[in-house]
Image (cartoon, rainbow, N blue to C red; front, side):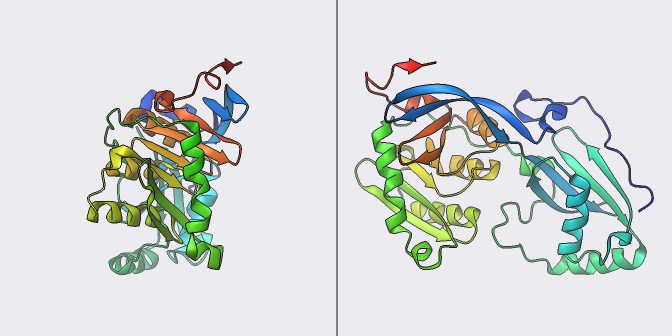
Amino acid sequence: MAGWGDPEEYGHNAPGGTSLNAVMEPARSVHRQIWRESGLNSGPRSIPEEIAVALTYNGGTYAVMMTTPLDLEDFAVGFSLNEGVISSSADIDSLDIVRLDNGVELRMWLGKPKADRLQERRRHIAGPTGCGLCGIESIAEALRPAAVIGHGQQFSPEQIMVAMQGLPSRQKLNIETRAVHAAAFWNVTTGIVALREDVGRHNALDKLSGALARASTAASEGIILLTSRISVEMVQKSAAIGAPVMVSVSAPTALAVRMADAAGITLAAIARADGFEVFTHPYRISYDAAGARERC
């Protein structure tokens, strides 16, 4: 594929004040608090990075995806093949990886027959299952600032553990299929108020948002519980719901941590039977006197 270029280097900053060059590393070490039944600890953890990547063909944006900044040429070709944009890698006349202020553009140029076919196909695109950025055609839109959350309520580690332990038995579709994600909302008064399931983690959270809105539930008084990885759009959706705390069984991405910090959300993750880890705004976790003795 003649004409495939090297990444263009720029010195701009990504959201949160982190340089884009630094963000281009596939993983990042962050500090977090670790709560276990034996007490409170802290230390570094390596978490995956994610960036907004726009895939463009002949000057037009086809999609914006959040992805790990690694093997981006492979991603460009594989995405193009899997979407049916091209039949083989030879259909791409040139591919440039262009670093922008707040993301990366995978800039591809196709020959006229393929370009004409793509233009027609774009009129009939349906979003793939579980895609969190369907319909978004700019990096700026993908990285829109999340709503800023007020102080909200505090919760004890024991309450968070009880909330997460209540998830498996209520995941009826997952019990049957072992193939879907869940998003739930918990508060002190009711326990799990609502739980929604879907093959797409973003879809499950969207469903939960709709359920809470239809019931006029005050999200500021509870916790969003997730069974999936926390990526940036999951933080954006949680902020739009208005929940001050989100907890997941899986780890967050580095961009999700930055977004949660900026939005004022307490992000806890890697919740297991014996505890969890807190990455942002730990003041909403009210440790008792014994557990609050932080050990280095």
